Image 1 (tube, one colour):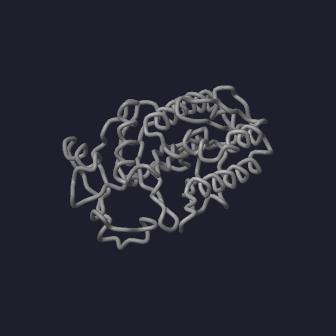
Image 2: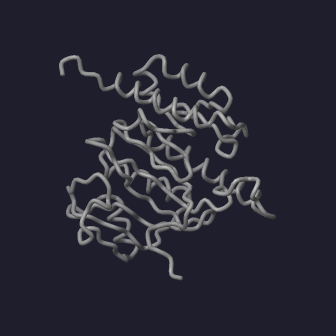
Image 3: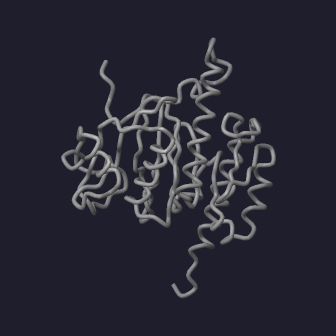
Length: 262
């Protein structure tokens, strides 16, 4: 059966970023540039919509404005960089040596928030519970996890999103939805930590059964051994930690954006 263009096989392993300091076009281009720097090459397919079109989720838009194109490398680069004044790229295909097909996408948003961007690949053995692994699965999972950690850190340190998530089969919540979010492997930028003076302490306490690492531009907190260098997992506490993290980020966002004159 022919594969579906612009959609990796499920389950998806995703590097997802929320960039309040960039336009949607700029965030897309910045993440695509990181994918290139990490060895991703154009695979020639993009999905575009009319420039300036507002939407919550791509599926809300009429089919006729969501156009899939097969383009050469020059046009691919121009579109992905955001250099077409009439069209906006919302999906682009890359090929990687380590993970095969990779798709950079704009994700759904809540309210007037910006769109997150993400880079997704087939999760392969990482998407299978370890107790169900067969011969060779553990090794493949380890190789893919190491590659994903590298891509995630590069994206966070190059693009500097406000927050970001390394995840399997979840969609990154935008600020308006953080209060109900479950975020288990999260990067938090220094500017959000500065906005809420209690945030770093609270994150370190929340993730004390997982792993917390200081990166160049922020803090990385993880609940799953495959997604951190220390190989530490929070086990059954992971879901509670994820929910607490969503609440902490929502609090920090409210403090950061508080306008006493509003």
